[in-house]
Length: 112
Image (tube, rainbow, N blue to C red; front, side, top):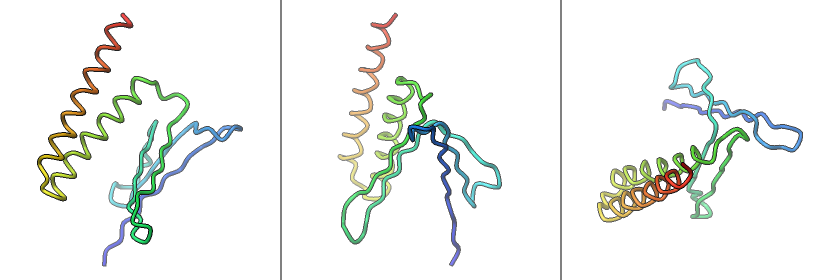
């Protein structure tokens, strides 16, 4: 059986706030990649529930964080369609993404 590893490294400041996030994966080549935020969700088979890790660096702008979450929901919509073939659920998630983007765009217009 082939195995693949994904490794995350988090550099913390004195207050334990993430300053840098890097990752590497055996299937992504030898390079180290950098991120401003990560959102990891795991389904715990014993607890039958979701375990989450959400981290972001202190230099992650709020507007980028909002886009990150909308993008994450959109990606989840595609995943739920692929995994379950539930087009109703996927469509509702995409609709939510559209509503959230409208909200973000409205906020941006008000700031100008």
